[in-house]
Length: 157
Figure 1 (cartoon, rainbow, N blue to C red):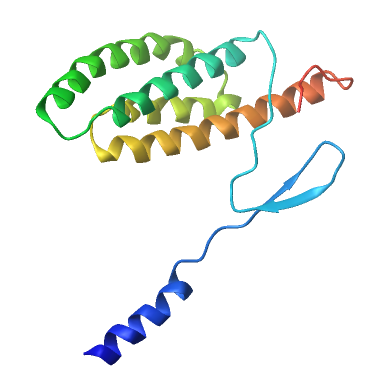
Figure 2 (figure 1 turned 45 degrees about the vertical axis):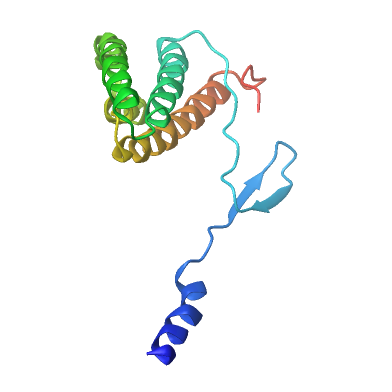
């Protein structure tokens, strides 16, 4: 029994490998990290830009909501009450997201995932992480579109 346990413990490092991210800065210099690359910062006043900012705020609120649950009955009830307000704000964005061009698929996908970010369960946190990734993808596409439209650039990286 001890040999089996020892063999399993020795194999764990092989199973749990950390991800390595290659990030390239604005000068073209590459760096490597175990953390994802920082998302590019964007500025703009298009509807997609505005929605991205509002969805980022909603994501932060959803993460706070999920983190507020500590397992006791009061925190669960408080989370359920706050969840209703979260979902109302999410629904208000729906018509604006539907009106976006088909080129904003990642922004639409992030909106759909955000609905489940505000649930008061462990599942909510995984949905928040997925929504964060989708918003970062949308942000990178918005930056690229700005760079193509304005070669001198008003998108800051």
